[in-house]
Image (cartoon, rainbow, N blue to C red; front, side, top):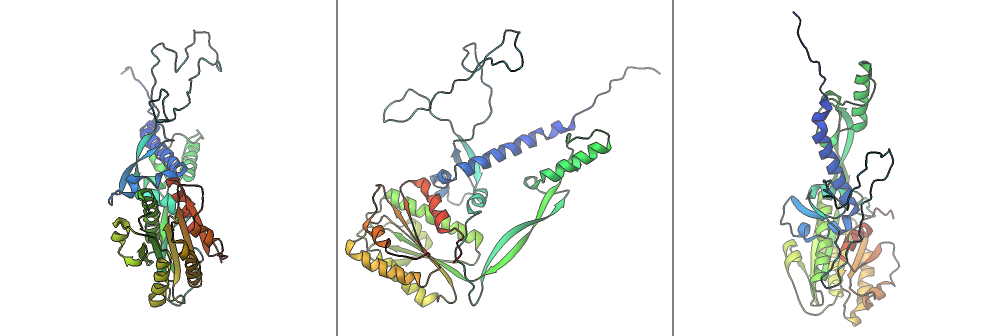
Length: 379
């Protein structure tokens, strides 16, 4: 019996277009995060997220594709008259310079930016990838444990984020070649290959970190925010990468005291500044609780440098005492001007590879402070 038949071939690769577009968008977000990391980690949305796992962060280099309608105004596109050839330029989009704020109403457009939902765990993976406690030494009783992930196998099932593109394309090419049409497309579900990993545990010697912050009256809202931002990321880095690290929080004005983590990040103080009080207390804590032969010891102090001038020499002496016990000492100074404080000038006398300083004048420089203090330096 004769009849009319219609033969068609469905392109199953179209079913994966949505996934491919989503993956490409995620890669663009990740690239934008890397490019804007110094600005992103100092955003209040992240620092004050109250434990949320996902927050919205403005990413200025990320622009979504969209259709622009010309309405015959010839601002965005050009149209040919029918005689156009390949390569002819029909029109160019004008890119005006972004407007700059000058304190008044402006007439030029600014730069567009989009809010992307960023998972804090993903942000931490990018930020903490190259951070390490420097100068780690073997001690008597190792208790500090870290986890690392080793991709050691390829499987046919797994998480979408772990697709091995190279192996997937090879499988697609082999399957298509067996059918007589060698090529990388279409890619079918059976071609997908995923990387799998195992958790590798490493044992390190004990470590303790002393976090010291100036909370005197000279520390304004900007200075306190910068200091707390640094210590916020420091504590998350230490606890995500070193499971048994101990953190001691010290707040000071003219007097220093050990405080809880909550008090450290929320409590405000007033009064004058005597930084030597923090260094004296740090020495006492180490002597009583953390003998250097058993612990890797790190100390980090943030201040605006507005210290009592007669106290500077005492600070230098006490910091030298700490350097005899610590693997690393970092001093961060938060200033608005281009001049160093008398305390920073006094610290220039210290000649030790274990001593490092940073100056922060803008919130985006917190990232540089983390990279400076937690770079893997070998003694």
